[in-house]
Length: 361
Ligand SMILES: *Cc1c(COP(=O)(O)O)cnc(C)c1O
Image 1 (spheres, rainbow, N blue to C red):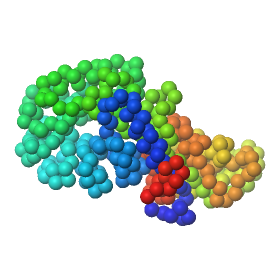
Image 2: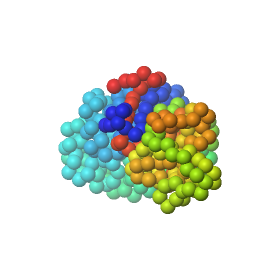
Image 3: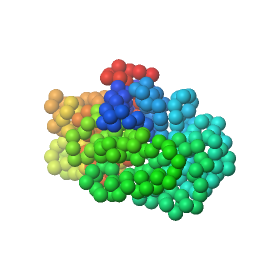
Image 4: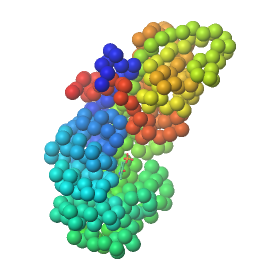
């Protein structure tokens, strides 16, 4: 990782806020345990620091997507229950058992492979309640015999949990109940972050909290109950006065209507600052919004800082995410969702983990 001196931007992750968000989900669940979803490098924030902070906050079950993510997580958390959403690729069952990874079995082939190779070891069964992506439906359940498995969990996944009025939620809940009725008793899990806020009927025995832990609002359209975890600050590398009529950046897609002061910051689309944000997003300096002008290039963005009271200097830090720049607004400007911005955060930032400002790790 680049040092704080050499990096073009500093990514701060507030582990105290992360832990507080975990506790908050637990309160919403009223005693039902909450697993943490830490796939994709802990939603881009770093698996090890994130998982260790969550374990310290009381989390004992973790979900990742890939076997390799599970094996890496096992190195940091020797005791935790680690579930692997994608299940084993053919022939990988022994490696799962070796690392004490609990596979989520998503297909008849995965179920039969597991039964043949490792049936006594715990597994989870994914039931398809309507997402039509992974999991067994009624026909597949007929075609195999899950009764012989050591089932640690049956689970399904909601398609539209962030829309509480969407009738799909209740349809999927009913479908889940119907599908699991024919199976041996096991813990059941349906809710992701937003699903937790659909109420106790959706809580079952284990929730799977993901994006809300990292500060994203699980109740869009209502106030965000979660605390901000991520703060990305870029450094001004260069300042340049331009005259009326001059263009900025590739294609000169921005032209100054009057004399302007342009700050260049060494963060670009290769760092996960989406190219779609050119001429659309804003950064912030001391709470004052400064627009991104011109195209986002691979390694640089350009900001109009003419109106910052007190002025700016080369080296001044600019909020790119968090601080004065809500992640939700940035995602909207990029035409995407917060999940995609977080998981795109690049490797060229200096990453700093802290608890309420005090550095840790
Ligand atoms: C990613 C994922 C989650 C977590 O979803 P969030 O919306 O981030 O809370 C839960 N369950 C499954 C199956 C997932 O793939």
